[in-house]
Length: 422
Image (cartoon, rainbow, N blue to C red; front, side, top):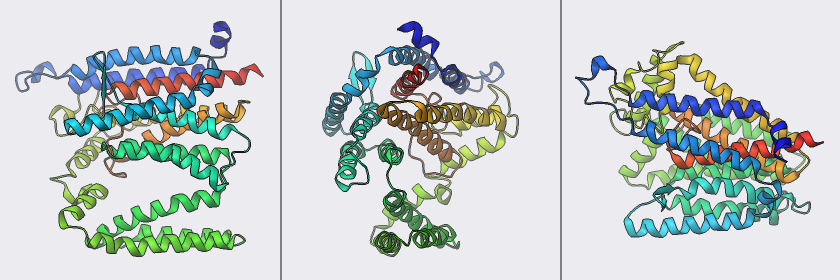
């Protein structure tokens, strides 16, 4: 059994993940390092994050191996139980948070576990298990509502913590799994477009206050009109698409005006950090400086100035990609994206080849996990996405994120190995 699994190992995916773990450790070493010539100026680096991440990386490789050798049938059979166990953990975290003020972790034997991270795995497995049934067509409202309920309950619990960045991963996973299962494109657009309309409306409101035109919002609405026209054979769906989005674009400005000034400033700073560089926009501004100063080849390993002078906040977690871009430059930043692309593209290829529908849907969920995390985190570091605190897998400091990412790689390798059996 083990010999067959090792023979069928997708070494390209495995080596990409291992390289990313190694790059992440080097990056965290650089974050905590202080050059000898500057040791008198600075009291000393903080190698605590690096040292802990070495342990998490080693444990992650063990978890990856464990996930690879667990028999396939256990994943599908235990999906429901696993989901409800993690759901109970989320409720416990919420109750603990109410008692202590705020909490996202459960302490188990000296280790802190973040259930909201583990829930990403549980949602992938349960949605894949639920949609495996032939009669569970996602285009039927009953099935669509059931899939939404599976995602909505943990979403609300995590938002309550509060951790909006992590919560937003859940609907992203759901939509991609539903689409792979056969969700009609029209229905998918109808579900997602109101969210985009709301975001662009708020963003355009802040842009108009600074004298800019709402170009993105207008372009998006024109795109919706084109889509509605091309799908005019489904007249009700097309009308609903235009009416719902137009209503959102007209109602949201009124709702914003009813908010208190400090609430409006918070929303503005969240969507447009550059509007408050010395306040809430400081992180993104310094991150963009770090990324831009790296140039093509970077300043060199251990030579980043933004992280050395501590101008860059959260440089060990949220903005660790900024440190990499400053020291390794455009070449290093693209190299990391290339490694993630190997995992995602190879995973999607395997999803088209495996014979099990559960495995195919789960692999797509795993690929969506990495895609969403990478896109949002990098978008955050270069000012294209709001600061949500979402880590970049393998690179950002954090035990829960490392273990979950390694576990999902192990599952991807496990499910993908079944392709070679046929």
